[in-house]
Image 1 (cartoon, rainbow, N blue to C red):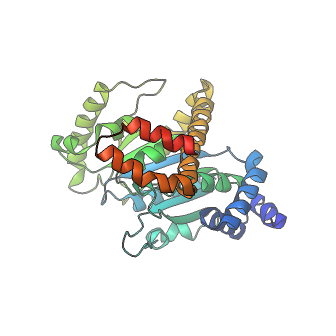
Image 2 (cartoon, one colour; image 1 turned 90 degrees about the horizontal axis):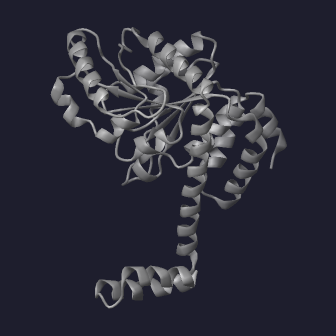
Image 3 (cartoon, rainbow, N blue to C red; image 1 turned 30 degrees about the horizontal axis):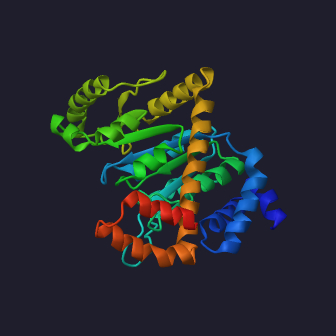
Length: 319
């Protein structure tokens, strides 16, 4: 492993950070080994940021919001990293990775770092390596890590499991809009933010805010925090400062009652269990005896000459 890469990364060198992320994202075994060595070395320098997840339906203005929000935080003296997860094309296998072109002003800031990550077919469109990328950004001295999800499928659940504060962006709309929100996503949210409250949308946003507030009150919120319903206009840069104040308020309260540390610890433990499951499946795929036995067992289960439990047990015993 190149120790100078680690040293430069810890000094906040953006080029070294980009190189380290490339190693983390690589599927080559030797790169994965290098990446794990780097992660182990930088681990003591991690954990000092606020991790914020941002999701929302397509067209809600996530990129504009993140740029304005990021610029506001930079104005407050923060270093901001944006990990924007793009959906990979199931046909070509590539990603458009257009986030830097969508966040021109933010990408020009010396104290900002934008990294579009292809999701490479990972569950729900969330890049599998995002967690490790977060650690690298923290080691490089970034105070706030923004993780933008594609807003489809399971991605929200995966991002919510790796951030401290989860923000769901909504469009101004009538009460019917509530039908379009998955209840589970609302339960994950630490704040609902109605964006595009400019022009004709302003009056509608107030009505929508009332509907959402009533809906949120019906949900149970364990812990110290009741998720607020806020409004903002990223286009006109209105209400963004209030949102940042709200995140800081949450952070301070979470630190005070130690739920911040507990949440991080739980997330780390759950991540370990998820990796164990993935590694076991990988071992199963690589096991020749199990691979040869699997079609026979599948056939027996389909014909109901063997229970699914007995078949699964036989595969595990083979491993």
